[in-house]
Image (cartoon, one colour):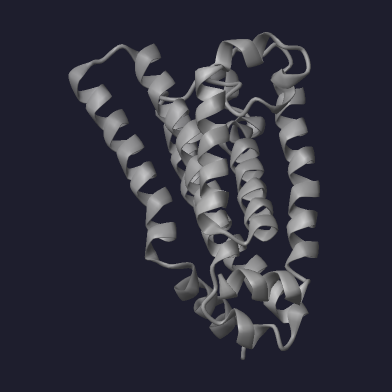
Length: 229
């Protein structure tokens, strides 16, 4: 199969809900910005909602999508005739969703920066870390938990639980000198004093979770057990 046809196939396999989620979120953000301009709403409040949608909404979408795509494959038994091909296919599928979400979020944030609806403190290139770092982290978490449990409900529940936990205990996480480095919402629910370190820590800790998912997806006995269940 040619590369273009292969990636087109993975886009179809990723599914419409996973691809529509980021697009709907971005459309809602742009609509909010347009309404804010029209009715003259308080700029600071509107900025907070817009950045919050990017920092909080996108990671939840990508985390749940990664958990679903990693933990569910109707053709798992067939694909496992070549285990390495199976995990490559899953990785491509997750990459499709993450890259699409990144394109949507980056385009939206650049537009909001240009129109003044993004916090001026985060308008440089590092401003993309507002949404990118937590989205990468939850994507890795979703993939890793699905690969470990072989259960989509368990993996999506874990992603949702950690997302909710950090929302509820945001103040405690910000004040703790250690846990603040893995706080997903350090931009809008902070402020976290060492914000750059927080973003880099999220990216760094996502790596071992992604590697763990890769290793686990290469073990046929785990995949077949999950498919049977």
